Structure formats: C-alpha cells, structure tokens
Image (tube, rainbow, N blue to C red):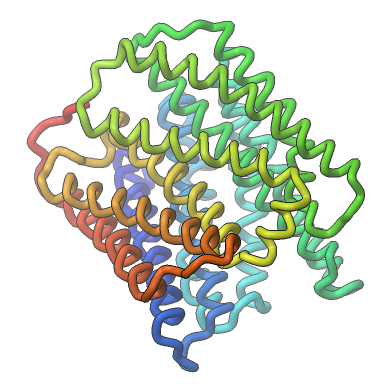
Length: 408
C-alpha cells in the first residue's frame, strides 16, 4: 500500500491544515500590523485552497474509503495513484499561490487535481455499495462534488470572454456552494451516520430518510442564496427562502436524530463535547442561510463582508467541518486524543474558533447598529487566531507520541 493503514495520509492532511492555519494567522497579522511584504490576495488563495482541498477533501476521502470501500478494493492501484497525484498537487499549491497567485502554475495544478479527482470520484462511486441513508448521503456528496467542479472549468471561459464580471463571482459561489453545502455536508453526515451504525446506535430509519430527502431538495435551489447580491429580482429571494426553509426542516429531523444518538452513545466527555460543538455550528449556519434570503441582510452582509461573510465561511470550515472531522478521525482511531497534549490542543483549537467567531460577528453587529466597536479588535482577533494554530500544532505533535489507549 501507498500508506500504512492510511495513517500517513491523515498526518499529511493534518500538516496541510496546519500550513493553512498559519497562512490565516499571517493574514490576521497583516490586519493588525500591515506590511507591504505580504501579498494578501496570494496568501488568501493559498490559505483557502489548501484548507478545503488539502485538509477537508483529503480527510473526507480517507474516511469514505475507510468506512465504505472494502479493503481489497481500496488497496487497488487506482486509489494509490490518484491519491499520490493529489498529494503532490496540493503540496505544490502551498507555494504556487503564495508566489504567483492564481496564475498559470496554480491553474495547471488545479486542473491536474480536478481531473485526478474525477477518476477517484468515479472509482469510489463504483465501489461504494449499500442503500442505507449513510451510503446515499456519501454518494450524493460525491455527485455534488462533481457538480461543483463544473464551475472551475467555466471560470476560465468567463475570464477570457468577460473578465471579472458578476458571472465570474457567481461561478465561484457556485463552486463554493456545491463543495461546502453539497460535498462536505452530505459526506460528513454520511460518515457520522455510518459511525453510529457501526457502534450499534439505533436511530429511526424514517428520521434519517426524511433528513436526507429535505437536505437534498434544498441543496440545488439554495445556490440562489449565494447570488442574491447580484440581483434585485424578488423571485430569487423567494426561491432562496424556500430552500432555506427546506434546510430548516431537514435540521429538525437531524436534531431528533441527535437526541436519539445522545441517549445511546457510550462516548467520553471530549467526543460528546466536540459533537455538540459541531452541531451548534451547523444550526447557526442554517439560521444564517435563512436570514440571507432577506434583501436587508444581503445588503448589510455585503457592506460588512470582513465580519459577516468571513465569519460565516469560518463558521462552516472551522466550527463545523474541521471539528466534525476531528470527531470522525477520533472515532476511527486514526487521531489520538488521549494524551494531555492532544487534549490541550483540542481545547486551544475550540477556544480559538469560538472566540474568533464571536469577535467577527459581534464587531459586525456593533458596526451595523452604529455602536462603539470593540477596542483593539484586530489585536484580540490575532491572539485568538494564534490559539487555533497552537491547538493544531499540539494535536499534530501528539500523534507521534505513543498512545495509552483508545477512549471513545
């Protein structure tokens, strides 16, 4: 095998997460102490691409292979070669975006990544068997990943023919919507439900079925919520609001599922805390999308982009996606959280995420209602961003220490 029990892949993915977090810390440093030496745009592109392709995508693919693909199939050459190519391209992206931004070399790397991920996606869909809700969620997550990728090829056409028009930005939002709300949301819940199944947690099949149905019904029309900034036609707000309500209905079924789960799971304090943290973040994400269907909030969010929109993106990628990935990897006994260093790291990470989110949204809200803003906001934000990086460093280092035992 290319990876011994795929442990090396996860360590590599965690290292990419650390690099991405460090890039984010430098961006926050630049807000507090501006420097002409830092290219904000280049650093931002490297930060975002490595975060959701290196950490998010790679980790999700590992967990999908581990939980849904039989060992004899995931040991095939297709998985080895595609993962190896993806690893190399993402590693090179660390430097290509930083040095030249979204230019030729980065575009070539993204193209190689995209084509390779197609091969991997079709292989997973071919090998993934089962008709459980968990399997369906993962399958549709892969479908939405393929849909999201259409925008990456369309972008090149838009840039050449029109430049950076509204269509250009809406194509980016198309990619982000179906990657975040499609691929990540569906696969993460599919993985979580599969873990519940493997641990003999009894959950109502009808609840899981309706959660999947309403989440699926909402996904495509919810894209409209991402483009409301570029139109004043009220029909788009109506479509977006209906999609948000469908998501809200799916959330009600999810909460009922979690109630049944929490009554049965034999998890320790840390795992239960992480699960609740991620689910609270997901609830807030859904409520934010409901609010975004109203023209008032669309207008204000655009005016206060550094607070509300950035806060929303980090709410998803850090508070929901990353925290849930930590939980999934802990339950799969791939990441160790039974050493004091790892527990301390997780604590720093959660505190950093919690307080940076509170600062972003609170500062935006204070500006919105024209009240006195938080003094030394950029410095305080930088300090708690440092917490996030320190937390990931501690979690990363702890993986090389000999584990004591695997507690749930």
